Length: 116
Image (tube, rainbow, N blue to C red; front, side):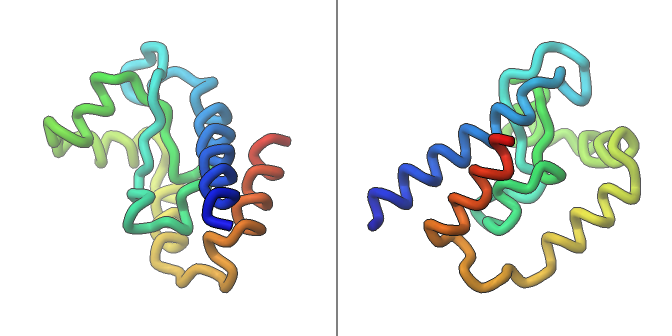
């Protein structure tokens, strides 16, 4: 069962990535090569495949989030995406996940949604 779940997680990760990587970097408009989780997938796993929680970024802008902590990035992101987007995502982040979270059927549901 664990192996099946790992395969489904990998497939869902790829589908989420491919859905968002179609766009240029949200900040500098260069070609996006990575996708950043606004709310980390480790701490907010229920948002792992939420398209609102992903932003296409170039490698340099992604590094600003993770290694060169640039305090201007989050306000800049809110300005680009809008306050309504930010409030909606924050509400989802602090809403308790539904039962059945991170089960094989949960992964299958996300794969189906993302691949269509």
